Length: 564
Image (cartoon, rainbow, N blue to C red):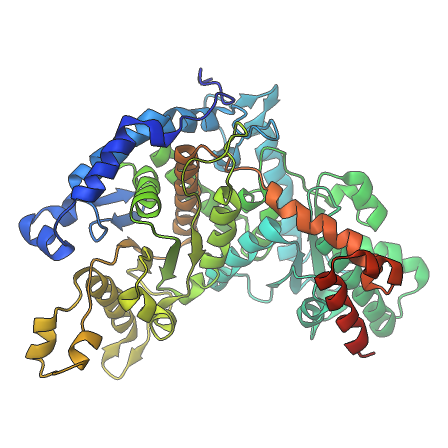
């Protein structure tokens, strides 16, 4: 166990020697990416590192070897590595909830030595025990041993959750969809908008549908509301198609619903057999939980072998982060680079641009991971943050983004760092005549980072025959920072590595800023107010009048214009 006391007040980064040196370095920094590459033939090699199967090129960022030296000095002065070790060892670094932070334990291989014991709990034994139960259930569904109440095998698994109980599973399913078992698909329901429940169940056969309700406490408003809606849909459908009687309804719910929850009493009250509830622990935050029992839908549709490979990818990146020297530690370097971009280059947003259609939900997944983790203005000891914190993450896949928002990245007035992600081997190799379409796709990937880095000078524009005011319009400044991440292929392992990479990047930034990246108090107020407003929305005039003028006016507008 590390000797670091996790409750110790964070080091104010702005008081460190490294921070002062970085400020001076920023002011004195001269040159451009064109000049830096021309002056240093080894620049690309110097700033390119491998982590597990990921090949990461940082050389097109606005940094020099001195920048990186000072950032690593900052990491040492604020204790990033010590806090990293404390996290892996199970120290209660989630200070506001007095909890360990052990999502990394979810992917430790079976038989890891020494075993991890925290707060008297054999973590490895508990994790592997739960995985074994999940895999047993998954194999029953996949083999057809588990059937619906009428004896038909399951064809669709509907996962009901929200936040980390939805964003992770749906992102991974979309990324690895080609590996789904034939005849078995997943659908995902999260939004409390009734349209989502309607569209998710539309076209499904209740007799062949299995529902996973994912809510640790089994009290999440959106999830439980949607679960009740789907239960009503299922029972009504079974009455019509299979002549289900009232006496058979309890059996039907038990055969068509399982839970990912630790609240066994509430699970049973809903009608789910507690034997078919898979739990996880308070040291797993929702946005860090896709590799826990929250991934039951993935283990079921993709298979336990795929899920094990997925976990192995996470673990490979964990090992890199825990053991690689700082100068080659990719999550550490990328986290520090984000600090440089936010706190010194004044970037406010961060684009993630996967050149893979299967990763189309990856930017949305990262939005919760990064913005719920580090979107805070209070440090872990309750004091106010002394720096800008957090970044707005956003993005779209591939060439779609090129024809939408790349204009702003190329020629806008804001610094927008961007991570480009691509794979050497396509999932589907297609040709257009003699053109390999994946090669055409990757030509765009390579061209964009080149254009953003090196731009196009006025002289180069003139040389192409452009004159007058159009010269400035067609000039590209360059020096737009990008990171390129490549891997041989989008496999379950590589996807796990990518997720873990960004988990650890987020952790590094949180430590530098001194904030607790593992709570989420900011999501609570709106949920509490929504419950209190229910009576007013339903038409209680006294409650409507008690609201502020804007809220009461909007509620009255709703009530006047609601049809049906």
